[in-house]
Image 1 (cartoon, rainbow, N blue to C red):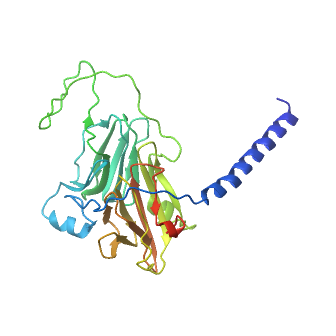
Image 2: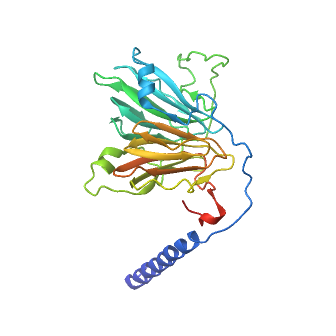
Image 3: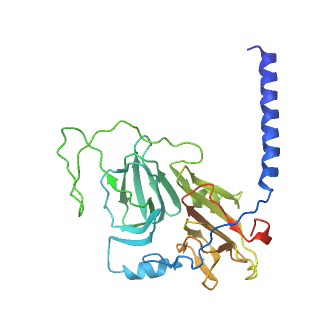
Length: 318
């Protein structure tokens, strides 16, 4: 391609991108209307799910244990736990066959060894994700226990990589026999916004640019984890009921500040750093950073383009 043709091609590409960028906001502003199937009696909170899990309560419940697992979310889409590992404790190398794993390191330090990546040590504020079929392992390093909030797809069970001749059979979980198998499909690669980790304290909180934005950390066919970091504002009136999702739950991890939630059938609640808030399917909910500070929530839901059902007179917005 001659220099002139390269210049012309580049100019045409820029024009196409510009036209696309000017068209998308216009489409996003269009409001549609539909009759939505909202449950007459929305689903409640079935243990271990709660409107809010306070981190302080979880830590108090395990104050005499060095290592523990505390179930926080169990539903049709996700299983989420707070997990503490004692100094020197490590997991076996494992992977999940068809689902991405996501976690937040809350205290201590964890060395991650993920196939295809340089090993790294994650401390407080690291968000880490591992694609499906990608072997990884974790080890607590240093003198303090590590604490993490870990999210897996519901019913996902660990696989352990091996060879045909290795004598390394794992212990059989209750009701399961670990079976040596062969398979062909390789691990899912990291691509797009799906990076191995994000250092939230460095990239957001302590960043001189101090970004306050809405940006996905995970985006794939079956998972959506959105980092929503916004300046607080006065509490909206109760008439602002937010939205609901038909057939989908949504939950939030609070990595920073205070965030207010109004969930249908519950009084207004304020969640603090480390807390987890849960809204069952079909329940209206509204979230906003509390006034006078910066609050961040990780919105976790099973569909990246999930339907937000706002009131008909709300103009499809909160």
